[in-house]
Length: 243
Image (cartoon, rainbow, N blue to C red; front, top):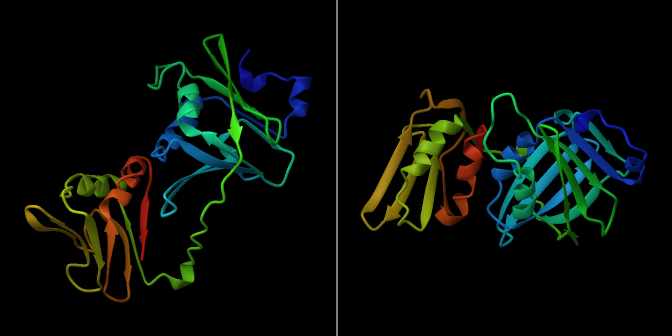
């Protein structure tokens, strides 16, 4: 019997219970933010939010909405705990990370409350595996508090195209300069490496650009090393650049 259809009286002890027919849907999302070992999990009636931070200056969030689960029950307004993301991903892909035609791994995720481990029960082709992952005291995460009313410029690009542009950056440069302008070149990525300055320009009417809203010219520089983690997410996301 698949996990998604099993019922147990012992489930009542958990403050969070989630079931999904395909565990790879969860692991695929979490891999996009896996650039540090630990993550903070926020569970609410809306689903799961998993946050990863690096040096209190880079933050990545993965949202796994309640509708993605076959069953999702939570007994508190919000549940928060810290977990080893590397171990969680290893458990989620214990039957293999690649898709097998006609075969899925069902997942049951349980959490009994503060100080308790996160329990995972996975089933594939009648084979059951259970994992218990120690949870930790959650750290306070940064609140970047982005406000849409204060956005001066905004561009929405196809993730595939931006991923390709990022792969061609001069990695000997310490910074990536991003320029948005209502006039040509509109959107420019610049690096300053050992071979000199390089620029990649994207016209606002390019097939790569889905939306371009720009009210004034603005140039910002970011450490290239801090932008590298975003490349993982580009393969499964639509990226919005807010300045």
